[in-house]
Image 1 (cartoon, rainbow, N blue to C red):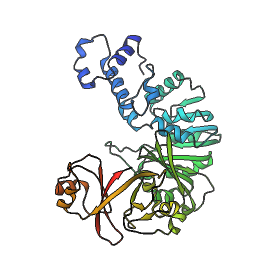
Image 2: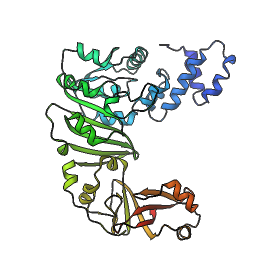
Image 3: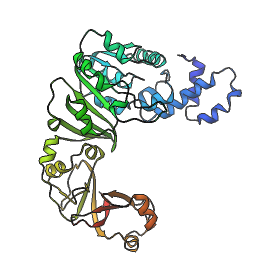
Image 4: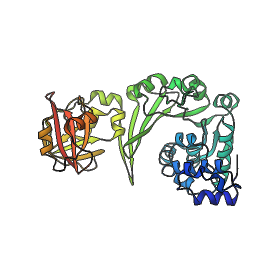
Length: 394
């Protein structure tokens, strides 16, 4: 691992907003500088600017190759999941760049960062010392080897398995990820009071509950309406999958949208269906991923448009709805002339919910451009008929 000189760090700071490819073409202008390494740092800092501000703002922090930065948690999600657990000892078996580890260290007396990649382990060790995270111990070994040699018992073992294949393709199933969580589960539960597992948001939740079998609670975590990860808390004694508490969380600037339910509550909920009323409600992405379709309507006392549309309606405006709220101006058929008459500038934001055509198909057929103040929901109503809701966002 290279520790950069004052001159090299100044070069990174002076050029951190420039195009990396253009900088590489200027290599001959800086014969005394290790341009490849410096440009790699600039590129990594640019990619991390939004998700890792604390690390980027420190000029002495060393960044790994770009892929490790891309795969790391954001500081927002790392801080949230660190707030869910606390204790004496946590072991991060898939430490990587160490963002999660760094935040866990604020809630545990001791944290062990396990990383099999030697270069990545060195970078994490250096950065933890730089950031004065003195309660983190780094170990350069594989998760499997660490578990074999570890004789104690941690409060929590955390895993974020690698989800990249041999050809850099993204993987989603637990059986395809490394380390093999399903194979390691017995030893994980024997060496910790609890296991916290992070998975891809693409993994089917019901499948994960069935395969893991030891889940006591799970969180679907979204940031500004984009699902980033699903977290599973595992213990030796767990309820049946239909009784597992599920928490849908959408983190917004200055607030959180939270809905808690169980699969049993979702199955027992009785939705009510109506035609579109004065207000239309679209749940946030975390709720949609968690699948609280019927429970949400019953919990908030709002009606659905159709069993599979997952749009809700009410005559009254709801405060603090966990998603987006709209005033329904009118409804129309899926007819080009009729739709364009509703749009003075021929622009609208289009959403498709339980509708045969895609957004691209609709734009091609109608000529409606992206943008503007109007929102069109193409959906199916309770009478099984296609309908377009002409709305304005509240």
